[in-house]
Amino acid sequence: MRKRFAPSSKAPRNTALAAPLKGILDAAGFPSASAWRNAKLILFDADWQAKNADPHCQTEVRLLWGSEFLYLKFVARYRLITVFDDADSNGRRNKLWDRDVAEVFLQPDPAQPRRYKEFEVSPNGFWIDLEIVNGGLQHIKSSLQRRVSIDKSKKSWTAELAIPMKSLTQHFDPASVWRVNFFRVEGPTEPRFYSSWQPTNTPQPNFHVPERFGFLKFEPVPVIKPQKKKTSKP
Image (tube, rainbow, N blue to C red; front, side, top):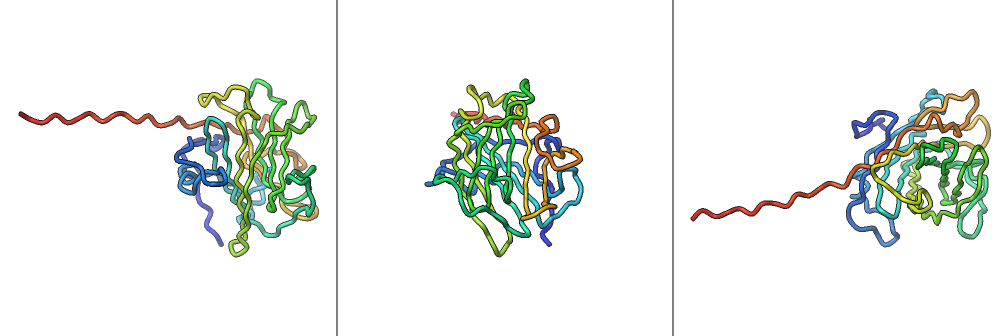
């Protein structure tokens, strides 16, 4: 059984940290493996009520930020993969949540508690992006980029997302604090496994509880101080 590692940051349990992107992107436009290692690790494997933990369905999340994109990486352990076999030509699939997915809900403006963005990706690379306003949803055409792979030997799938900042907020301020939550859905039929980072604690599975979201903070870019030149003795 895989060991359950503790998160690598000292942030409160309800706070996710996005590290500043370092280095160049790879040929596909995603951060390098070394860049991802600089991001703090988030782990969850319990259901939406913080019960029934299952390490075989554990989810890892890492976040990086740049001026133009917010990057997310999911590593999802699985028992069984269930996916749609059809989508739009660009991979977009309506009602993607009816199959296995990893999800992030982002609320850049906490002053609008009933307005937030939802992004989902499946193990075979299908995706959907939505804006939720007072319970209603609409497609946002975010120009989301994604890259997905499955490691059958480890029974895990990995999804990297690059979400344009302009689809999230008009003016990105890395000093701001957003609200955020991460979710997984797995299983072909009910009862499916609905897991979440911050529990929503609803009687039935429900991820759309923004008052239960955690917080997202953007770590500042390190300031490199110039080295003082050593003076030679006369």
